[in-house]
Image 1 (cartoon, each protein chain N blue to C red):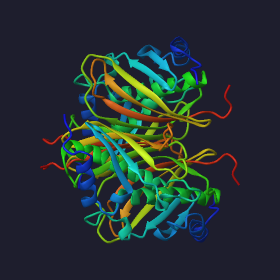
Image 2 (cartoon, each protein chain N blue to C red; image 1 turned 180 degrees about the vertical axis):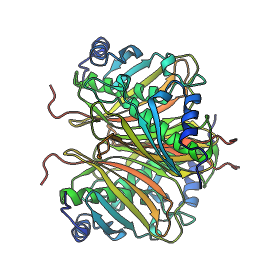
Image 3 (cartoon, rainbow over the protein chains, first blue to last red; image 1 turned 30 degrees about the vertical axis):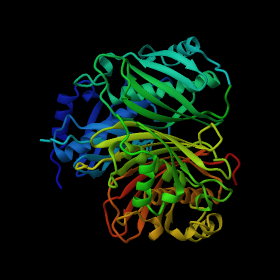
Image 4 (cartoon, chains in turn green, brown, red, orange; image 1 turned 60 degrees about the horizontal axis):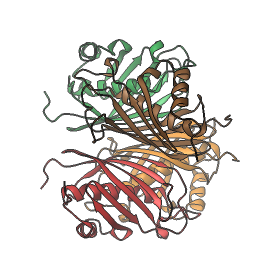
Length: 141
Length: 141
Length: 141
Length: 141
């Protein structure tokens, strides 16, 4: 099963459909059922002490599984997150971006399920783990 | 078991410890093992179509269980979120704030567990459900 | 919205559709979007030390949200669990049954979401918390 | 970091500490921060239609992360599950065992976090995904 959207197409889609947050993310790599997405960490993502905030990591996980899904099914601005589970395991390294390695585990007609490991750039131990479910609208393009 | 911090004390703590986000939240009510927290929805929390973003709801759930915990144990800026699970069930009503009704289910020496229902102000059906675990540092004041 | 199946109807359904486990559970009370289900704890549910096993609590949560859903939509042996999240918070009391207080938070065409608190009979503090999602098959009677 | 318990040591531990369920599981492979565990599917694990039950998959995930943790820290019958999140994605193949590929993502002093993919033997698509947290008692060893 080939991808329907590549790095360039997903980057353009992100900028058009989610202009408020598109500048925060870089689509680094796309492969069938896989995506690598980077969060460009800026002051807006930090908590006191320099830690990346939980909501920022949530946003990275959310956009990662969403883009991995769109890569397979084509542009669907309406797919919605129905469930997320996250474990926060380590403090992110200070002053560096976060990268999410994402895999789709299921791509059904109604539901897509994926998980991701989030790491600080240059580190091997994961900062956080997330799994997400997306509901795909019945009538899709 | 009485609360150690009331609405005024938690509001002041929030402003001091998390100045970046303190203006987003209102501590509406505190009772033993319970908290009601409101997210003042502004443009920064919205997605295209006027829906409140997932990360904004995550932030509301996160701060709600955190404040419910601090109300019981006193100011602990270091308690950290270790796990969150959320279900997103309905689209929030447009142009109104969100309220989180939160209850602590466990307050142990090492872990606190709570859950919350998030509703649009004026609605009864919940928009989202969250459960969270906080790790409480061994040496606490 | 009234219930389509009451305690008697759900008890009969359980015995017919799930004869292997029906004897483990008692349907104690049903109300719109709510159910109270009891696990009759026997040796088969115990771990060394007399603790009720995790899988037994999972089974109680699973059947509780399932029955709360069926009470509203009628007998649907095909509805399937798609997601569960559980927090185990306290050791169950020894030698007593467990009761699950369950509420449906969403009952959509495709998905039902519910959560439950599990307590030892005679205790007030919850032993465990669970939230579950059920997928409801498209063609339903 | 080497393993403290190998396949033989974990198999013996399982039989001694959890005699009720030890016969259900086979410790297939152990490596640092990794484990492969097989559930020997029998009639007791099945639901009508031949599907492996949710509680049986829960039990497999639970024992997998537990054994992966013990492999690293040595025998600790007291470590307890505090959280689990599972997604059920496909119907298991009929009449074959299930295998859990497990990795530890964090092994801290207080908490261990792991996840696993569960597949039917001979299949590549996962049947279920689980992530779990274990609390490790303060006084160990």
